[in-house]
Image (cartoon, rainbow, N blue to C red; front, side, top):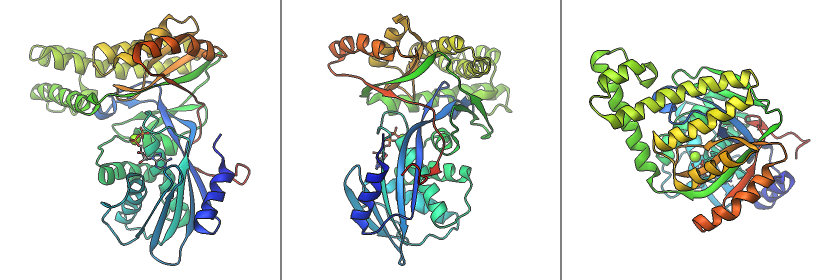
Length: 390
Ligand code: ADP
Ligand code: MG
């Protein structure tokens, strides 16, 4: 459990005053639907009960003072300074949010801020989105900016684009601000329409296994896959100019206009169309409380990501194969863009420890390092930390 009282105390020690505001914003999982976002399809994220915490106090001047408890680093700048080049990376996420708010014509005074949290970094649980959304939500409250939750998500996404240089989609930030306990968010990436889907796992529980690897192939392969999708769309567009993305493309059109030109582009585009359909089927299964069917779709999605879209890796395949062989695991797949990060598993309640014990020695022998289990529950989106919690 994250120690909020200790976090407040460290703010007090660092700034010599108590924070006036405490905010938290969660990391997220994605239940199913990978590589669908940039093809204007659906995703199915849910906020988790791991958060980035932000403590704030206002200042009378135009200075911004930042402190990261995780890195034990501080940094100071002015609200009027636009150049972020000398700021450490963690500070860029915070100052990037300030810039995005200012770019929307809102006024920000000086403030002190401290950040910390228990979202594991770089595990594919989107600690960076949790950070930008926590900061956006906190500044909105401190300066009464009148931002909506969706504004805060868009500000977080723009911060990754502009201050960090990562052209991410909107899913992570959307889940962090809009999350609802015991629900997933079926988000249509084409128009940001969304529905909450109730999650009732019955006699099962969620378990994440962090492979503790991130292969360097990730960025170049991601760009290659995007290019293949765009190529497929442009070949279909020669006959159907109204088609905007793979979301609009039918299997028939793929077979006629893409397959003869490139079997590889065809396979990649077909994956996206099928993955989108799998997500819709998964939502129906959840609504029927058919958890076994949902689990089957996870396995199916994994092997399609591995063999058709080719974005898995040996560690992820190993963990999903082990899950498939274990009698108490009814579904598992890689989560995120691929080449590392976590697998998400649906395990019979109380059987996670047995599954972990069985797989851990084999995994270590095979790969020379351990994986890390992460227990999660589905949590709420960005919120003020109440006095009951602190
Ligand atoms: P993730 O998949 O977790 O979002 P990223 O590489 O996108 O991984 O973001 C991780 C970065 O976010 C860190 O390098 C750091 O700059 C920032 N960050 C995440 N958590 C914290 C934290 N608790 N305190 C300060 N910065 C953080
Ligand atoms: Mg991130």
